[in-house]
Amino acid sequence: MCNDRFENFNSERDIALASARYEYSYTNQNTGAYAGEATHTGLLLGLGAEFAFDSHWSVKAEYDHIDYGRDSVGMSGGATFNASLANVENIVKAGANYRF
Image (cartoon, rainbow, N blue to C red):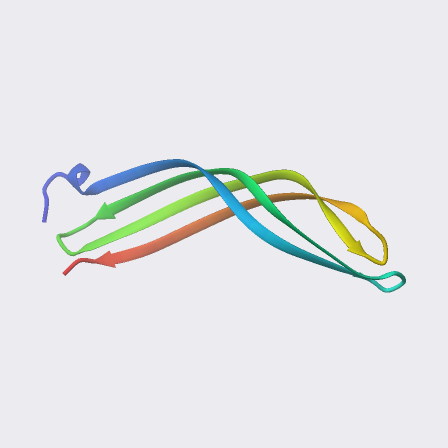
């Protein structure tokens, strides 16, 4: 086991572009079904840390914030219209690693 805890600590920061393709559907009881699709691009900001507490085991945690911004999607069906969407994702991940 290491005497200096800082030798066992690792942190990371990420900035990246994210892209996702979505398909949308909407059903209105009076006017019928509508469908649309779009690809959204946005900014991903992430922060993570990993701590090894002996030579085999470590624990880690990560937070990612993805903001695809505000966008319009053309919907077609009974009529054609644009739907305004705002898409933000906040993702938290945690885990443990065992090294052989």
